[in-house]
Image 1: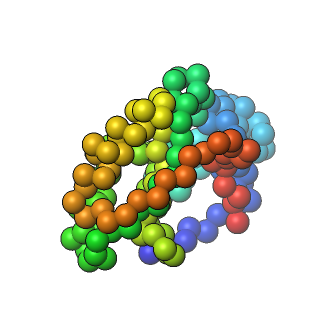
Image 2: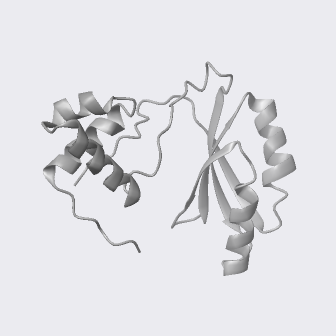
Length: 157
């Protein structure tokens, strides 16, 4: 488990602002937090180097780029040993349509978020790739009909 890094109020404000707008200029960020540009840039670099800020991304409109079907798939493995888990993770990391994978508790072992262009493409993906992973025992698909909240902004404690 990673150790928690102590953040002060300025660090928190920087993280809140960057989560909402990662393209903000350093000068604008400095103005909003009340510091000059040089120490602001130092603080951002510190947050990046410590691993708190992992990366910056553009959030795409999935329908506009032609990815109209999103699903969650709960997956159970044939066994819960390290080799099976490692094989599963290695296999799903090679499938670009799987955009999230979470190890979970409950009736399944993993939950995947999958995006595809249409239901036929999704069906082929499941039949030809996901169900062919040797350690997969059972899958339960849930098609996402509507999304009402899709935030990547985390509350900063």
